[in-house]
Length: 185
Ligand SMILES: Nc1nc2c(c(=O)[nH]1)N(C=O)[C@@H](CNc1ccc(C(=O)N[C@@H](CCC(=O)O)C(=O)O)cc1)CN2
Ligand SMILES: Nc1ncnc2c1ncn2[C@@H]1O[C@H](COP(=O)(O)OP(=O)(O)OP(=O)(O)O)[C@@H](O)[C@H]1O
Image (cartoon, rainbow, N blue to C red; front, side):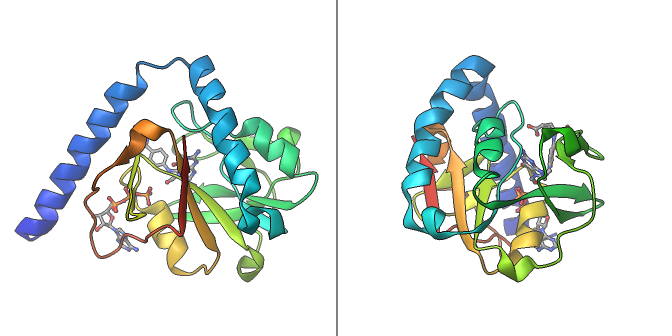
């Protein structure tokens, strides 16, 4: 691995640590409250309003809280969630909380059932991240799941986060894929 790649990864590690510390100042309840206005602005974007098939995520404790949002919009739109499959993400249709099972590796709830194959029908993807910058760069948890997934999808990409996750600059390497929009508050 060359020197610049090493320093990018070191910088990403430093940022992940820094953000983790800030997040510890907020309880789950506080994060749920902070998530409400963020999701409100998401719902107002024309790209969101118009999309019929959207990929969301089932939030982990440190992310913008999406559980109620997923259930709400699944009544109006086709909602897809990621399912961890080795080093890649499968896409699966959300068919209600009762059909969620614990995912492999990280235990994130994900739909049980067959893989959603019509990838090109996904119009919008909501993507969590550890940090974003104003150039719409994103860095995630360091496993490159979304970077790999986004290579093959042409949907409108929206990064979502709390305001303290927006930095002046996040380090990027050649694999990192820019967002089309960042929603935060
Ligand atoms: N809600 C949610 N679902 C998602 C993702 C995500 O970021 N958020 N993913 C996006 O890629 C995929 C899962 N990727 C993950 C990659 C790494 C870790 C992870 O390293 N966890 C650490 C501890 C948590 C942390 O780093 O803050 C661990 O298990 O030790 C978790 C999930 C698919 N589903
Ligand atoms: N599309 C890809 N194919 C192969 N390797 C990749 C790809 N994207 C990134 N990598 C490598 O995977 C490692 C982790 O990448 P990176 O730090 O960019 O992940 P991330 O954006 O934080 O994670 P995620 O996308 O899961 O949220 C790096 O060594 C990176 O070079």
